[in-house]
Image (cartoon, rainbow, N blue to C red; front, side, top):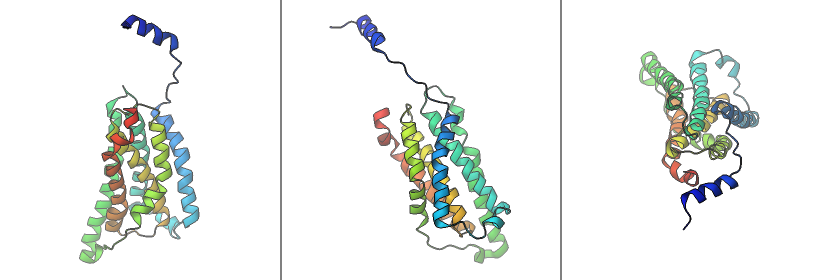
Length: 215
């Protein structure tokens, strides 16, 4: 039977240097360097919406657009932070303010449409293309996220997976808004934002299996 001191001595002799992971902020920048070109390529292939210049001067378009991008950035930061033991827990709350602004701005637009136009302002049609589009565009950022997170130790795999999927899907949403002409607030809230929320929730539910080998 090998005693504890012998085991420690053997481990000390055979231990290899360990490279410390970069900070969550630096890892976010690396992740964006892989995700943003995909969004750009998507925009080139699909073609930017013809009224993009005008839309970028409208708060109703810009506020949720910027909030979605901020959500992607801070959710990515939270995913990376949650995979490093000992990081401050308050970092996990960073995505909350931009996420609240995102959904709140869309909800406010729905309410304003209702007040201004009544039932005619609540336009709702089936648009099943949003979910697969966001999933496809967000695939590369999502894969990059998984590979980078697995270098750490995701001790909260469901939460890590939720944040990672939220970051990738929110980034895909940003790309979709640049090319998709749909601006009816309820449609954007249900089909585009809803697709992001659904993908993040489902991914979070399967997070333990996704990062099982690292937990």
